[in-house]
Length: 286
Image 1: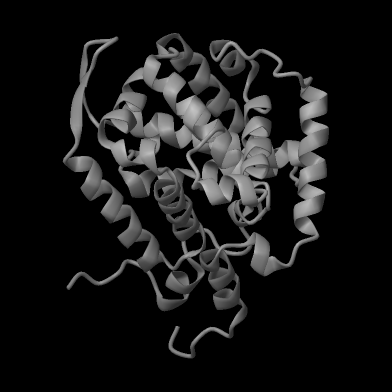
Image 2: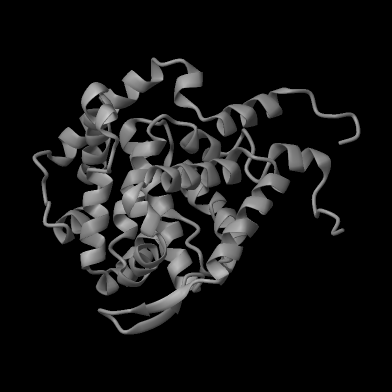
């Protein structure tokens, strides 16, 4: 059995820990809006989107389990122990290793674990979570924003991306998107993903007897309004009826409402367990 390359105390604190900017960003209640924004951005890469379309047939019929697994994965990498995080990342790498195809519009043959595809998904997530947190009013200095991007290099490495290929500052992240944008396109698969994110299937009783549909539609519509202008133009939704200032104001209103909820209602069990674990005294053997 391989001996972990960390101490018991390092394992307990995880790869980021309570003093990290990552914990502040990922524990904020606007995290879910950032996650939806990331999915909408990720869909604009034809090859990355082909992988989702080709191997996630069940997602189109019932997206909720896939969305829940994705959120749980990010929560585990952030708030889990190092052992839990490395196991979760190993499972994802194992799934990716078996999948590949040929994207029709570009003719590119690919594997889901090609580094450039993994990097696209990573950068969309980092940019979205940070951008939404800043616009929501999470108090972060410019240095802390850079620190967040740099901390997330660890998450990229866990999924199989070499550290040297990963943007480590806000400026490097912006440069990355500038390089990749000529390769992006709104393919039919991306249009379908957009519709699915905004109007996911729900059981009739949920749709008509609960506030789930309007609540989800509000969050998803807000995520669209918070996309970069170039991404909204690609979706042919340059304004969506909201100016950038109005979208930011709406997001801040949503955040204030969510912050009024009890922690149990706005934090997943994985997030709560992470905070509870680090609040306990360290074991004497650590």
